[in-house]
Image (cartoon, rainbow, N blue to C red; front, side, top):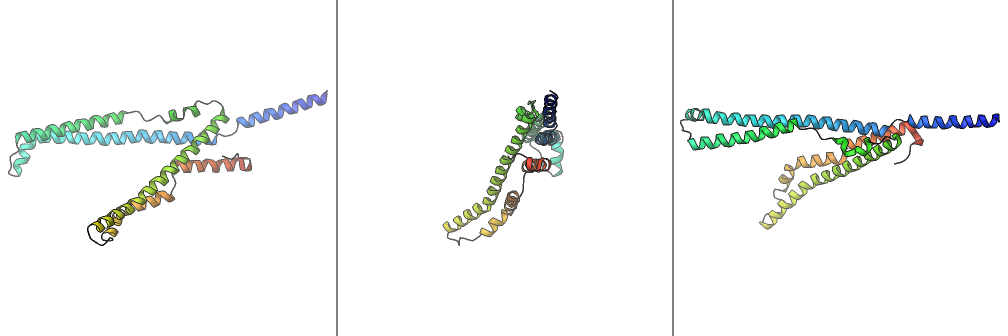
Length: 232
């Protein structure tokens, strides 16, 4: 009887230990994903305010220019010995003023706009209560973000590298149809696209934030679990 009690106690102990250890497992992917989304939302809010301020400020300058044209246009024109036509003055003042009002309104709206709620894009992750399921879903999201970012990076790099080739091919084709030697101006055309080549090479051999985040997750998981880490 005592043996049975000791056996049952041992089983209970290891079951409880397994449950506790499962609950104590750090949610690496979930933490990384949460930090990524918090950063995106912060940058989005800051970007809205900066862009909105710039656009609204430009609109204010336009409005000020319209006011100066309306009230001081004749004086400014007289400095050069000319006379400002009243209809021209009205047209410039009204047109610039309306443009300024539109820009000021758009900038103010952007400045006051709420940033995009990135958490709503992955609400199934943040609404999940089971920590193990939440961690698995977070890892899947990180992997998906990494794959999409890598595809976009490579596509952009190839497009950037193709720009000088297409430009050179078009120049050579025009030369052939106009009776010139095919390479006339080809080097100059490619030189103007040097920025595109540099950008394409940098993108081709670089990494995106999303790719680095997924690599960070894999490295952290490997350091924590070692050979016990499940494969993705």
